[in-house]
Length: 267
Ligand SMILES: C[S@@+](CC[C@H](N)C(=O)[O-])C[C@H]1O[C@@H](n2cnc3c(N)ncnc32)[C@H](O)[C@@H]1O
Image 1: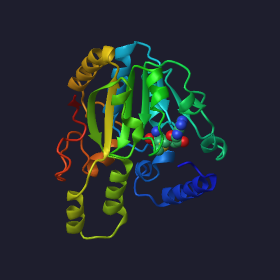
Image 2: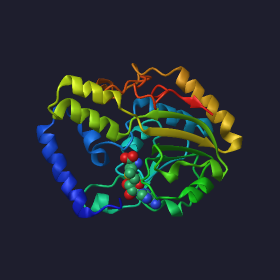
Image 3: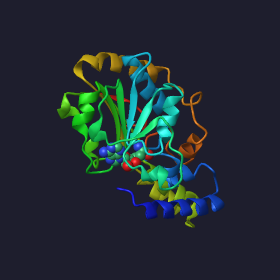
Image 4: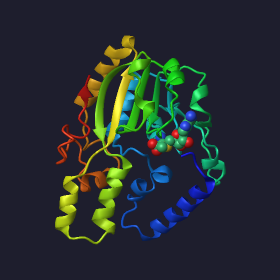
């Protein structure tokens, strides 16, 4: 970004227009991720993993989502950690569009974080942002998601942290492309199948901890993954991911994506 208010207003008009013609009420979160979803396409298991890591540090963890936008992911986390908070730099995304800002989101710049947290979550920060020092000073545990290879804000190895685990999920763009090809573009099925073979899943989740927290974070995440059931624990919108070929533990045909999506890789 940074955001231009006129662009946001235009996007909102386009969202209204899309809403009038959409084939599924769950498509908009992948077509307009900033307003209706998030830049990483998550499942409930991602929320449960994040919550399990936070609860490894404290039964009532202090949780901060940095650059939370309208707080789509944060809202899900708050169902398990009711005091979870977010910060968002751009006041205009609320006040400029007449959208009510929830109390649990503060308008603040991550460079000036002045409290300690048990877990800081940074979901898909745009390229060029670098507030790793203030984040590293303010917590012992970090979960970041990044679009492969373009976000500085997700590499904490040089900041006194160890990477404990990672997994791969689609970005909103991966799903957007598939939805567009499948439902909103006229093309022969054979062509769509060929295109699907090139499909990637470019969003990576990294879990970092300071050395003294590595064992407890790893143990909590392992326990969570062992009891994970994507059938019992899922959001309504997850069927879109299944339909688009982004299934839980599904392996993509693309040879650059070796590990199944959502499979936790341990460091
Ligand atoms: C790409 S959006 C991601 C929003 C949300 N996390 C998601 O995944 O949908 C990045 C957000 O971070 C905010 N942001 C950028 N720099 C920031 C900073 N220094 N402090 C707080 N928020 C920031 C932007 O205004 C924007 O809302």
